Image (cartoon, rainbow, N blue to C red):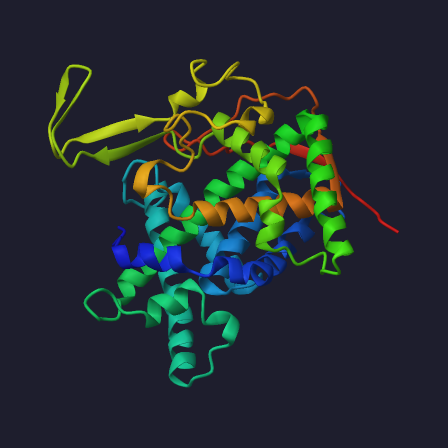
Length: 358
């Protein structure tokens, strides 16, 4: 399904995410408007909207509106078909997923045609010139050829999935853990207020976060790290051996696929009291390759830095504008997960109140 090439990896890694931070997230923060006027909501619905808006803006320069709504609707149908029996008959999930994929492709065709026309006429807005779609349409591959439409559409869909589902699931669980641990909320709020105070004192705009601000969110990031330890995005992964080697008396031939898991996250050997939610444990770094929320080695998750920034910005704006609590304070799981990915499907209900500042 996915034509994954090294040029795309370099393209995303070199993408000027930091330069677009203010523009991208000021637009996608409209996703938080869904909680205005609502006293009760499902955390995952809010984080889904935010994460999808963020990645759509980054790769397609799409803002909330009819086109994004159409893509999101078909995207959810397609995503449900990623882990199901491949029965291509009307009424079955797989059949619906294939149909949704075709419709998404048609929507991509329209966006690509419009962008190509803008490129040909030299009227692509500056903000759109650095998005992923523009790069895929204009940057040649290693052989100097422009990429085929099928490649572009495959990878746009891949990036939509990779950049939204995992972050939204993690953020929903962060909301849950903050609600369960008031002292965590207080420390996050204190950290975010300190960042705002520093911006005010230096005459900077409060709503325009910089990489310096992101780097200052030390405790907030520890909360996310601890959430990812308890609920890693991916439970298993695979690596292919590039040479023969020996391990604990076993001979592992070159070319074998090795399976790694995130079970080290729950080992008392590496994490004291491993089932306890404790962000303070991240004041020190764990041993190498015992914590693998984004994989490990030279082929870690392509979008881990984007995921980190998007989650930190979300929490920053959430805690400075809202307070929340669990509708059922005694709720403690169990969390419903996909069979392969540890993404929550839980509909954690929260009560939300907007902070009114004078």
